[in-house]
Image 1 (tube, rainbow over the protein chains, first blue to last red):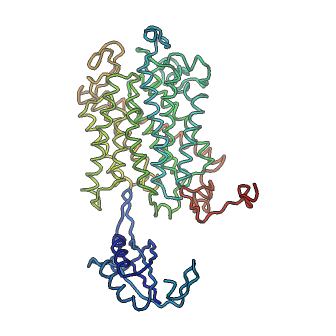
Image 2: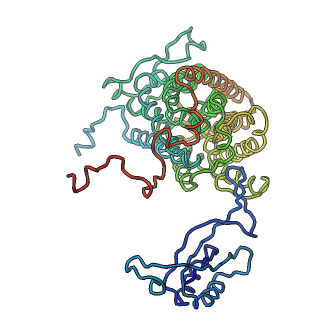
Image 3: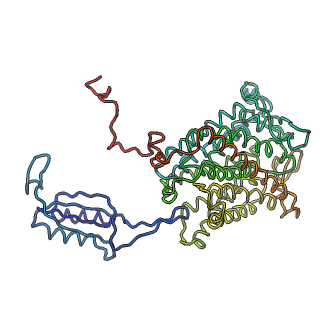
Length: 112
Length: 469
């Protein structure tokens, strides 16, 4: 059981969602988030006063899947989220101890 | 037709004039509610939205009560003649009396400003029309004070300021008082309203002291779409502001409306131009364009129906440029750099009002006739026009405009300072620092965007719960 976390450009969310579905994954949770990486900051101007924004808008996607699905899923996400410019984001994989489906109380692989 | 021969109006009342005057007044009222409320609400930080909007709504209400009880008659009733005829004190102020009887509301409107052609509507119409102008003035200078002014102080400042400052300036320039007799003119309030509001904002802000430094550093506007709504209502509401001031639904009202819009469009584009080519960032900004728009509206106000179309274009172009450079460079000089005029009222209303008022003395076209009895270009009895230097090659009008501006700046400046020091003694002017950190919730126990997910009703068990019904 793995947790795949991908931080992507917000306008790539739709494509990533379709790619994740196509990879046979049944669910995904997304959160609006902000982060900094190699993109650097941007400036906003309000009434002549400048403000520097280090944190850039991102969407954080979380997907729980079986161990044998991970590689295919990562490939799908990379393909869908990539624009070949700075700030395309990152994905990482972590181990999960336990998963429970709340409605049925199913555990482990059956919960997905 | 019984209706045509047997109208329910007195013979002096013209339904067209009366209708336009009431519509124009309502348009001007909309500039305050919700115009200024959402414009300022959108420009302040999120934590000050409720406080700012409540000050706007309560200020509007306070002015109307003061207006009925004594303000209208002090500003526009018969002059009190405290000195010999023609002297300054003779034309200083009207009487301290209420506008409360049926006769005084429904009788024909009379004002010292125009004794030649009688008004064609009732006193109630004139009083309401003049009220919405009085009401917006403290709301404008509120822009300099938001983000730290004590709410109780505001409730005292508005009635005192309307009574002691606004009525005097209105009587002197509009109520047939001293400066009106001398020949200074102010079509719709470039001086009485905007220059005065700019000065009051600046002096008030100096006395109240700056916002918390963190709030100044981090002065994010809360909502640019609300700014768009407020600014749009201001622009189109100004059709009533300037279009209503001939007091007749005639040719000059139409000229004033067209000129107002021309000057405003020119001023908006001018500010955009300076932003794109002369600012450090070289970016066209929405909030900059809105500043330019306000400069145009304010600057054309003293001359709306007295300049021609080219004059209006020049007024917008010149005023927006003057204010852009003041906003960008003069703001770095003392005393401007030392005073926290939160929304920059001294620039967009003070500098713009002064520029517009002086431009009357240069650009007013004597062929633009107010009260032309049979139409434009007719100089019959009661007709009125103003000649600027460009047409008359005389600086006389400019000099009169200068004197009136000097009066407004000095009287409003000193009077506002006295009022603020008195209010400081009575209830204090600033919220304390802990309150300023929290803003709306600490002062009103309300916030602009309540988040129901994290709130629970306090009364528990609820009397609405099925178990308790």
